[in-house]
Image (cartoon, rainbow, N blue to C red; front, top):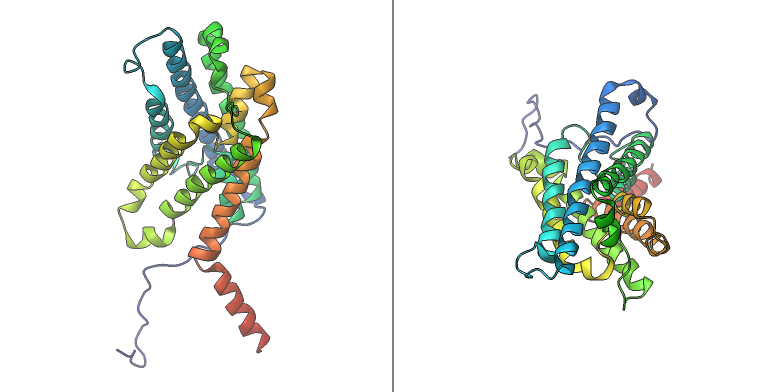
Length: 281
């Protein structure tokens, strides 16, 4: 069907949102910015509080020789991490975007979804929230906390650092790729139910990655989670392996951002097409 002369062109169901400014000084003057930073701090605090308590509770039960079916088990730990992410992303998505993870923030920054000032503020808030959350857990019972590993991420015996790094890269790729896909504004424009369900696949991604990598690294995929536990536990092994839980997630997030933006969303093809058109002017 051709458009008749003088007719109004049809309204598109989707408009690509403009990229976030690299630096946006104006947002530093807005309460909504600081409210979002506070939301990230509290969400990460709650995330570490619940999940580290779950890990310590499981280990203490195993140490006391309780029935293996009586505790949460590794499956329960994975559920605790995944379901807390689901709950917290649902609660904070409309305020801060529900990152709760420096790797997610870094990936979204690379994709020009958030400014540098917001990304740095979020990462600082997430790390401080994680430290406070684990600190509360230790405050409840320091003896239990220290005796059962403090929820700290460490490379398991029998695995070399290359395997641990690879596990963190792939695990974080799965998570950040899911974040991009679940929050894609193009999908939201066409499927009105997606915003309501977006936290669900993100939480499931965290759940399945934990099932796969708990035996290898205890599952980091979140530098704030690993840093918070390492700071409060403060043992040599946790610090020796700490770089794995930063380098791996940041690399995984960068790969996910590139894959989603330039391959799936054809960013590379549009850039090449734009270059070709300008060279023929």
